[in-house]
Image (cartoon, rainbow, N blue to C red; front, side, top):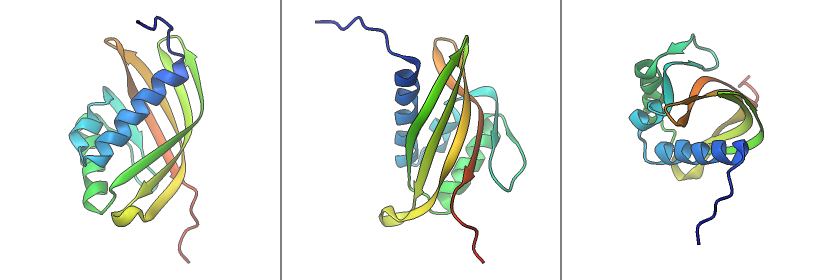
Length: 132
């Protein structure tokens, strides 16, 4: 039997978050970059804007080469505004042996492009204390 129930926006974004985590697990920076719009902007902490898929791919590739192996995302809330959606969530990043490397929060502005949700603006920051 086919389930004709429409997914909520939070369910749709949760599916995209699962894809993001899977690309991270596979160490697939190109796959991550393709989840972003062509003119996307990534705003990581302690760095300038990363604009476009090529720069975003290089950022995530560098993070993976530094030892980040896994990402976990926990949605706090998602709100849809026409062809965009705003996600506020928590993240955890893990290194080898599932050792916690970072945890924090993020906001993503998603944009509905060609029938699918794409990351358009992505800003995150750590909740971990800075080393003294």
